[in-house]
Length: 142
Image 1 (cartoon, rainbow, N blue to C red):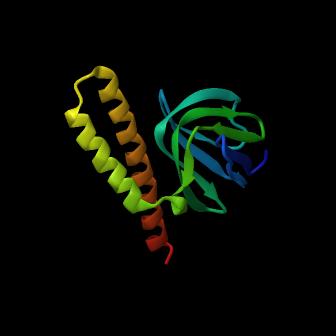
Image 2: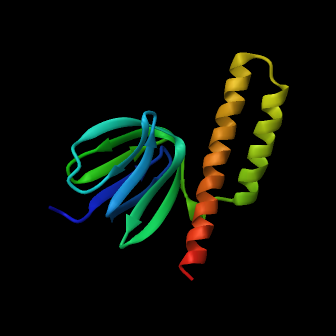
Image 3: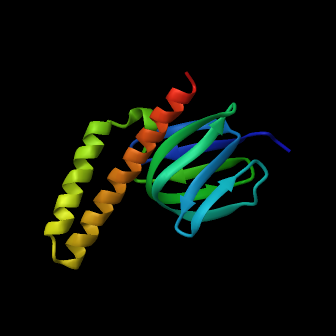
């Protein structure tokens, strides 16, 4: 059995990540799951959250703004409208987006407007979570 599986994270604009990894942990609509080499094939929808994956024993983190994950015998493919590695995230901009979404949510009364504000808040929270975990990882590795 192989000790790695290739992880490919794709958005409409670019390939965010394309490398062999030891494991992938993602949050699907049904809960968190970890994929190891040799995992049974599956397709699942992803929640707006972070994805963790191990490369040579080191944990890497990406913010995944929903999408689909397909697990094959040798590759995990994530297709998302938006995905960013933790090191790419502008934390100040993400905090501003969170504050803006929180303010908009409290001012909205229409159900659709509230839903859109909640989605924006979820995206900002996922980005902030990825950035924070990335900073913690860097402190631990020093």
